[in-house]
Image 1: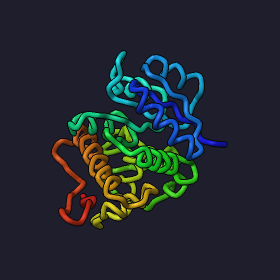
Image 2: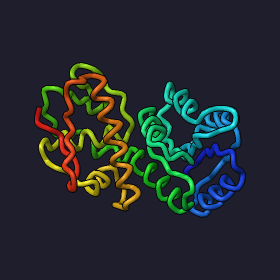
Image 3: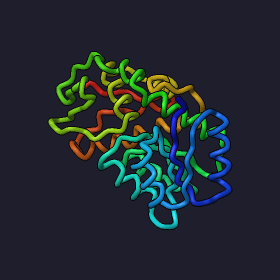
Image 4: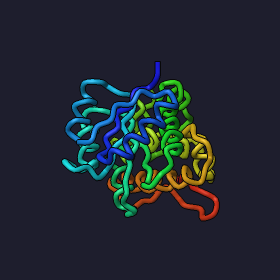
Amino acid sequence: MSAAIVLIEDEPAIADTLRFALEREGFAVSSYLLARDGEAAIKAQRPDLLILDIGLPDDSGLEVLKRLRRHSDLPVLLLTARSEEFDRILGLELGADDYVLKPFSPREVAARVKAILKRSSPKVDASYSHPAISSSLFQHEAQARRMQYAGHYLTLTPSEYRLLITLLAHPGQVFSRAQLLDALGEAAEDSFERTIDSHIKSLRAKLRLVRPDLDPIATHRGFGYALEQI
């Protein structure tokens, strides 16, 4: 059965182009111009993924995402014409899985959709069930796929969760962006590697909310990221 996608995009030309490209890849796509119609469709259809424009005429896409995350872990790909880093980071912090900046290639959107669905599938998750983690600050509840940091549960997106346990399983080891993409089940491409930086920034922000005095994820410029042995 093909994956079902809800697309909320208020520009008809963009929506039609995306729907055509995704349907050629075998996806079943329902498109909506307004936030309220798209949210109603999500409740009625229970799709496999949401493609969500940030700038909608009747509401902010970020507000839609915020409401969605109160009751659902539906994978979300954000579309935005805004170049500000704040919007992208806020979207990831609110629980988006990835983002694409307009103007974009429909093929890139299709590739990102496939990558999100691949890493969101139970088959991919199973490989992360029992990593060897030993840390005084982090406690991993593998079966529940939850992580505590300094005694507080973290609210993580699937991508942030996988990145964190990959780093935790090998403290002190420097992982390149390509290696971290591989941990997420994605091919190493320049545009995808930049997404790793955004996920790491969002993850760091969530860790700082718990312990502002610590920064356990170290950046090794020109190489990648590592979890400090603390």
